[in-house]
Length: 227
Length: 227
DNA sequence: TCAATAGTGTCTTTCAGACACTATGGT
DNA sequence: ACCATAGTGTCTGAAAGACACTATTGA
Image (cartoon, rainbow over all chains, first blue to last red; front, side, top):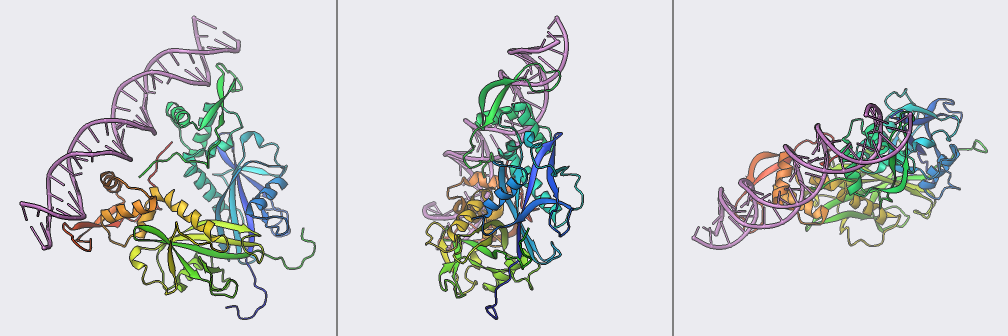
């Protein structure tokens, strides 16, 4: 089919990661100033190209990028969507394989110096269709995610059910009933007690909470229903 | 970062489509013998490369491929997942942006001559990780899809509720209760009557069925539940 | 009037949502 | 004893699953 046997040209391919976390009860996304020469210094999603000699598969590209960004390892990451067109990058046809990741709140600080966390509902105009990519990630976490244990990945290893409730409220953007939430989470055995009791609220703390950890979800099961 | 400014090499990128349909009450996938010189004649998913001069975005690549395959237009297609590694194609690093599509049963015949429809649970060994891609598509349709109106895209424009029930049974791989199914589908207003009554079963037909069409789903809403 | 498929009614169980209640421990 | 937060009990209503029932037509 190719008219000549000259080497095929492929579209530029990169991996972009929508790193989400919670600050002040609201979802934030991590952005960083671009380092190369193209659009140098502009805020954008963290990302990079596939290093064909180092990376065996896309997952390794993602891990490498996260490691380079200040030692983020072992966080929850999932592929989001692949965006490709001849308009999203002025240099020509490009494909962005987008992932999203959830960073536990307490690990915010240890991430690389020049990451900026911006509330997802107050984003500036970003290059390369990154606004759209972030919207897609938020939509995914709120939709499919809101009814699964995925948002719990925003919590520290050990957490109280009140904290967990608050994370779900932040993600879904609405108040939830405490009683129903506890019932669901416990009867479905999504969490298990660690045996510890801790007083959490910074001031005016009274009764300590039972602490829980996420029960190893076999394949991130969703808590949905049937037809 | 690049050691020299020689032109960057990008991984090979292609789009592969898992075309699903129902035959004899079971899910089948469309495969075609490969046409290029590499692995010529081997059965594989339909797909192709991005034509950077013709295709404005990935959606157009998909549409072009489907058109080339015997005039499939206007069928339901959705992006599935992107697979990328240095092992899935022996020629080197490659990325496959996979889509899945649902072909209404009655349009089977008009598709290109050399498409073969194989039951998804009786696939031969396929090249390029295509088995895994098909598994992912089936898993997606059964999971997320099973609780949405997506499987209804396997039906003709106009269908009876019994036909619809049968499609869902085929997709989910289990019997469903007729009464509950009708209730759900009607109270949620997923379908609307066309006003026609038709006798469907080829032989020994008796009472005619009300015919329905899919009500234009605003954004393919899922019928799931809450936390 | 019978055969065959289309379509309905109703009971039970499950579970979300609402909301009032009790429990614990620091001050 | 009091207060703030942790955690429980219980009622109601919606909807799924099971299953028996009625309806409509052709032959």
